[in-house]
Image 1 (tube, one colour):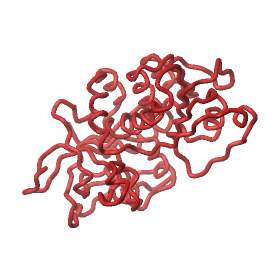
Image 2 (cartoon, rainbow, N blue to C red; image 1 turned 180 degrees about the vertical axis):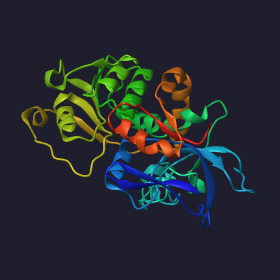
Image 3 (cartoon, rainbow, N blue to C red; image 1 turned 135 degrees about the vertical axis):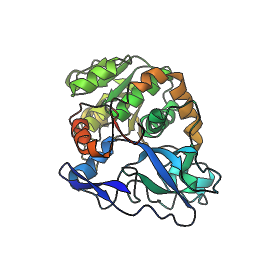
Image 4 (cartoon, one colour; image 1 turned 120 degrees about the vertical axis):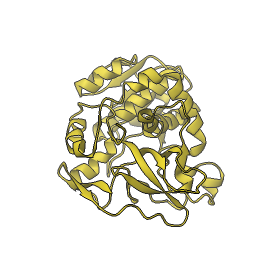
Length: 321
């Protein structure tokens, strides 16, 4: 089996190893595509002890299994299905703090991987293979965050800070659920211009025109978090989708002297997958524009360089010719 080894400092080596050996309760998935994610820039920069890649679609290769030959996406938390959170439907909040595919378990920058059975989600026939990974982070993570915030702020203006894949997904979901106007703060020109295709209005964080009932922070950067907390309107909500290892905020007067809600949102529960599919179906031509490059394994290192520079939106490793 050929797979990518992330060596750090932007270096990716293509190696050959034995194929995956599924344990009890696991199946082999032949990867069709694995989309790049901003969080993958951590292993790209630092190196990683196993194969990364967590936005995966492929075909089950397990003769005799009920899903053999079916096209599935991979739900990354290997949830237990027994704890209080899982029984309540919050599979992404499993109390066992399960290993995540592509992080603590080998992921999708490879020809194949072993996947826990409960993490296989069949893809509807009308969803193209190259768009299926969008159902996970771009639509799934962003959509879950917006659904949480909708319980508090159901309409009105919104600010999205960061127009990477998650921020752009948030812009699409916000628009589809009726929010507006939607402002976007993004320093990188290509992503900022891309956001305008979907109706977002670029703004400068240093000159915010108003305070927003809803703010989505999608960068994981301290400056963005600081700006988001200051920009949210009284009784508004801030959703933190961006991730980082550590962060620091100055509790300035614009933060201290108001009531507001702060929402940390992680991934999405399995029960929201059908809602994610509905969002994709509703605006498939727009979502199709996100997938702006598809390369084989040998092109992965170069593709990551372009993605890190903000020159690509949602490219993917593809084994589909």
